Image (cartoon, rainbow, N blue to C red):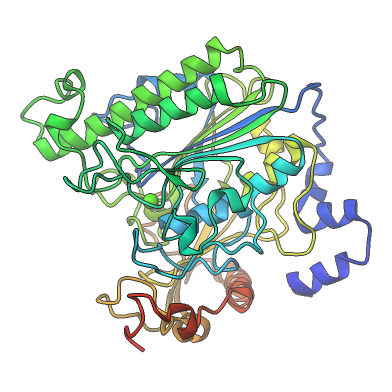
Length: 497
Ligand SMILES: [Ca+2]
């Protein structure tokens, strides 16, 4: 029985059974955790952009100073096998918000930036965790990079954060940018709840933390729980220039460190400083104890060395593209200064937040993630299906993790590199191209994926290959087909057919 048939069968039973079976939380029943807090916990996601696995002090960076995130890790748990939803921005964010493989949601690649009218977006028939939490009595607020549509102007007709369950939104479609200087400094493309905001002075991390603090202090109803989804632009390219960064931070990275590297390091240290300012405000507002905080990166880095000791980069399904630094602090659940190497993924967040809020994920669709509270508490779970990644653009295009093992595969042919954006003509390729060249790694012993054990672990290889092929077939069959008509009257029409 495949998972879709299973889902169909589930729907004959009661809601409780549907949820527990289809999200894999039957297993977690064995280790039931009762939420004893009278008040529903607040939930905060701190999401960075293209931050590498070794770009934080607490994740073994040789150079980059991140005292505030190191402190957060010391107060909670560092997750060393934490996976993004995809090796690229838009699909990864779709996975975080829906708990589903992004290909199921029709998010196959990044959404080209601002005013281009690219049609790909997160459709409103997807149910986000913000919508679910809102129904459960939460206030929901989004800050910063959205990247699930190509325009934050509601008149352009694409769903906005407000259409996906956020009561409040203050951010940008993709980059924060000043239209005159084309820099991230002093952006003039921020939208607030569907209306444009005048130019705002400063760096994006400072601006979004200012707004997130203002929301906490002045805009929310203090009697209700909240969900803050704070999405930073840093340290994504273009890297900020030395003169635009705080000078006291630049002085931490003097020559002979090359200026380009110094600016990258300083960008992350400033990001850390802003996150520290935000966390200090949580303390001052006495919110620390009943708040679940998770820190993540949406995908691996482009910059060499930032991925160490992993293989591969952003856009690839090797570990360097999908494994991210993960930190969770949730007093009473996480033990201070602990490290956890159990695999967890963006798709697990929505089911976990549902559990925290005492509510359920939608029962009418496949949810790929699982409630990971047992892991956060130091235990283990058995998943209903292995974690699976698929990103059609760059080889290798698929990964499947089961226990300590990860299988990698490539698509039989590749889309020409010149076709960087997603076009409707790619649909045929996405739907029809088979996976080939399977590789197998034990990432517990071989985190750098240097030793392909496909010809040694033959039984495991065949078993995992079968599961990967099944999952690939399933998510591709479910994913929306973007048609030529979706691209009509946009500047993306008349592209390669
Ligand atoms: Ca990214």
